Image (cartoon, rainbow, N blue to C red; front, side, top):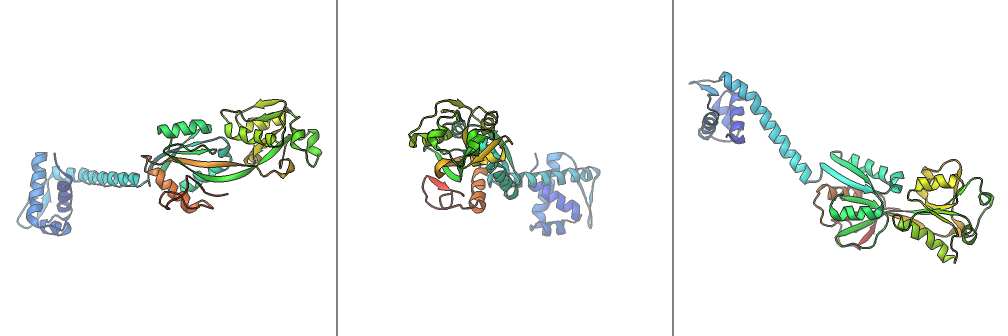
Length: 315
């Protein structure tokens, strides 16, 4: 079997048709160049070059082999560059888990940023609830996760991407829709459509915690996992809801969104999570892009020095 060094030597001689010029082009002396050509011809079992006193010519076999030799060298160079770009995180594939709510605004912004900064990284997107994302992240099935804040997990890091207020969703025909404000105790008397305590634990606890602080307990509760389904049920008159501000992008015409009663400063957070020792080199490249471009990024990202377990990306 021949070596790529032999191919390079042959291509240089075949293009120059002169051993001395080819040797100068390769920054080597003529005797080792001639030896490389001889080894190549021996490996192939054919004569590639006709050597004269003053000239060098290609044999028919040499002319045919020159075309393939150039292709092999180009493929080798391309493969080397590709491998280096993957190792450097500039190419390859990255799998991102995301909650349905993050797909309303954050995910498109993130995808747009990565397509601009890392166009050769192919993105595979997986919609999952936050709990499933944590399990998939720990198992290595996804590389990054867009999820609701979680308790500290060994081997995982998180950074807050944004905070968004909760809004009160009412049917437009609801009696409370025409009133400037209704207290939480009064809202607790209305049927409530909200997130389930397991699949949507974070938003469930956030919403129910509002009522608990006010000393009120909703009398009738309907649990639905996805925000767009909650809004559809509100529009159908099945109850009221408290939803993240991103829901405004999906709000049907028969639903009214307004700030929660009493001006309570409650906000839902969305975080990005990743493995501290992930094997995909594209993940650090993505984190570096976010650290540079995402508004409000502060210390704590890989390469930015020591920081707390949870850091902030932007409001």
